[in-house]
Length: 296
Image (tube, rainbow, N blue to C red; front, top):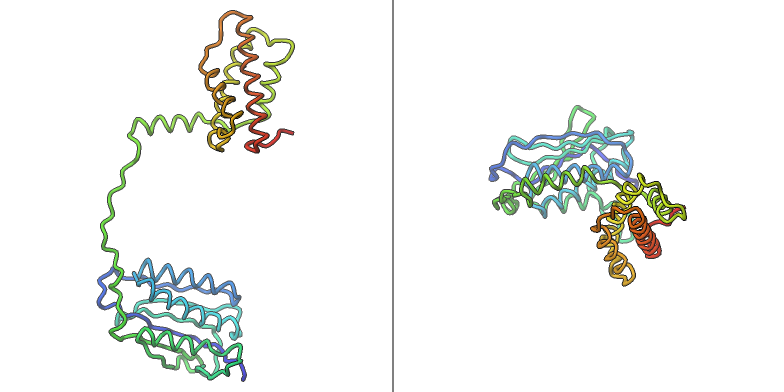
């Protein structure tokens, strides 16, 4: 049996006369005659029927199947490189859709494919789904060479009041007050990403046989405290503290962070080496646990 040629098709669904909703805007798109365009049309129609027209989900799903069949027919049998899709609400309060593949031909009609046929059931499916919504199918002529396949749904079985958005929406309240939000904003502003290379450089300077100059000791200790804070955060976020060794190192790091640097030169150098050692051990452990990438 020769393939049927897709024609401009208009499908009217679901009377909206009983639904008091704001005026529904129409839409019109032109899409390429390629298979991927069917999914594009489905997304547009789903958004339009559900968000703008407030159509119940079960009826909207039927419309999506109908539109998929019509668009697939336009892609397979149309002779142009694009086709048009429109949707609007008629004066009678019906949702109407039109798929126009810009190909003049004889009007298509549902066939009677055999049990083993692999195609030819698209229009049969469209007819059945439209009738399921209480509609009917017919053909009308437009501009001599253009034919529009139309279906209208006026039956009482189709309603659009089943899933109105009537539940009140509670006002949103922020989880933090203004002071806590300000503190959080300052933390975000002062946040610095983890720099493994800078960490290893500071560890090497702290553990070097030659201690840093007296004026460099305090800044280096402050940087190591920042490195330890980030390493502890990484350990907690990645649940590395479930590891016994990592948990012990993280505890030591927290304790060492809070200790002030001694004023005496020798004691300050010892404290600096302790910071460097614990930072090195915790970094290596997190690397072994695959919480950090190994530095090159």
